Image 1 (cartoon, helix red, strand yellow):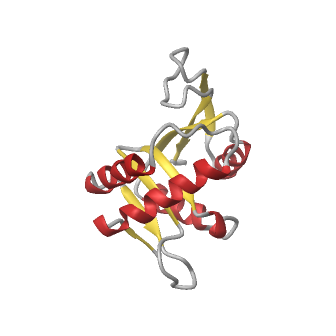
Image 2 (image 1 turned 180 degrees about the horizontal axis):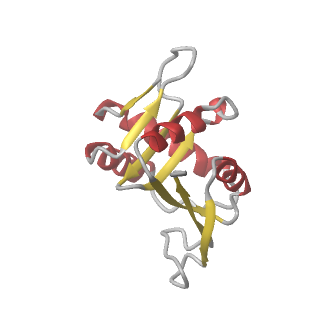
Amino acid sequence: MIRRAQPTDAGAVAAILSQFIDTTDWMPRLYSRAEELSFAGTMVDRGWVIVAEPADQGSGIAGFMALDAGFIHALYVAQECRGQGVGQRLLDAAKADAARLELNTFQANAGAQRFYARAGFREVGRGDGRGQGSVNDEGLPDIRLIWERDVA
């Protein structure tokens, strides 16, 4: 089930984000877990976050997406829930209400690139993450991707 995040989901959202950082060798840890929790709470409070509940109705959430004005700021799935369609369900929910979606993904994240290509996103630019074409906190090279609804 996909639903709008509640303030009580901020801890689970932050835990999924931290898990990705902890298990991804090329991703630097820039912020403390307390700062990640604060960031997650801010995204939830702004109304940007939807969450996917686990298929087995277990505790917690299986993944989340932060979306604002057609820009996907984050889409992460808990490690134990990957490969089960959670990310696709979140993306489908965003597509249902949008004519166009945009996001950046890291050049090092080949899995995300494959996922978004299968979902119909196309590359529209690359940056170095430090100001040449893009800027991100991590300072890592990234790729700008866009999806547009077919109107034909």
